[in-house]
Length: 552
Image 1 (cartoon, rainbow, N blue to C red):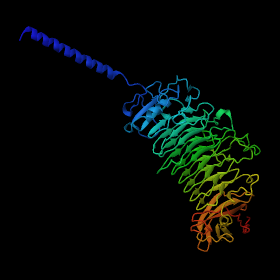
Image 2 (image 1 turned 90 degrees about the vertical axis):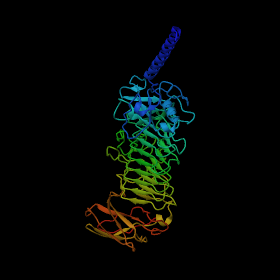
Image 3 (image 1 turned 60 degrees about the vertical axis):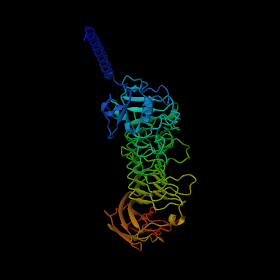
Image 4 (image 1 turned 30 degrees about the horizontal axis):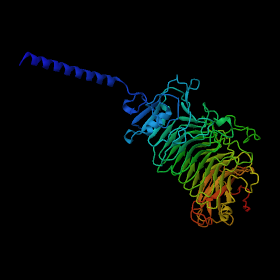
């Protein structure tokens, strides 16, 4: 081989080595360049370690780094910086199924213009709404988690991230589920201000925990839209649609709702769980500024707690909620909001405290405690405490009313039951409405025929035998106000309607008994199914037994 041949080979080898080295250098440079800050990344390799308070799993994290909302584009993602909440939601929506669930976390610096150093919160002021959702943000389309607790630093006493609606509060906030199948969305520890309906829920298996709806920045008063008491803090905190269904559907827990000129929660669909929320109070459960002067209670000078909870459709569970201080800024003769208004069937309403705030003060509500409206069916009202409802503690209404069981509810009132102007039906501890079928309205609860120490016995009410019915005995005092101060005994009558019970203690001189009867078979109360509970009886005392007077 000639010298020329070996020279050519040497030059070729040198060239090949140069190209390889250049490729390796380019590869090294590419690997050392971090991905754009706001791009979704695998949770194990993200640039921000989201320290969540709540137990959930996710595949992808998108980190919001700014309170800014420069435009209301429905297409920009966090590939356009800064990563705003609007862009993060758009990006989360566009992820394929294998990259979900996706966590939208927060890592906004304290130098951000939306940071409030005094309160240690970040406020996201929306500049407009998404035209695709007619709300501040695009629909959450399933398996999206927004967790305000992931924001480093900030206060521990409430949400660090607060969302503020545009303009005068005439737009909606977050909508969950564009279709009823876009499930498993989760909202944790956010504040909502200046929206009409703060959150819509159109799908199932969503979780909404530890949020503030309608409160001001420090959680001490309602955030009024346009500064107007009549507008309240919004029309609703959470409104569910009929599509909010499914086994173990939606869970709404440990949230605070205040100041709504409609209802705080409109519960529709099936199987939703509404538990341990504060409704009508400040974030700490108190009602600062609540009037104690009787002449000022439920007037425009009183605490503006807003509306309560409406329960519709089927099989909702409403339990362990505190509902107190409810009042709306409405015309004086208009009816104030009910704490819990029930229609539909199959619900459980239990262990709620109505009229007692989170500081255990008996501040009342300006409307009814529990209003059974439009003939609900097969609903259980169990072990609730209702104190100082200005209107009836529990009100039973509707020609189709049937199979609704009342058990172990405590009803207390320090003033005489208010008479609604123009109404023919007086308010009462348990109001038996004129719209009920006559045989039920006129049916008499069990009567006491013998009371000796702790031994008590009786029969069915006058003209109302009630075979095999469940009889519940309540303690009341001898003032002029009908109450159910304590459930003392629950027993079952025999086929003739006779029954006996043992009290936990003998009655005092100023104490007496009231009863309710609950049917265990169809037509024990004429035309009503098993499980139907009557109103309260007259008061029975040691000295004599009263025969009920029936007025139609």
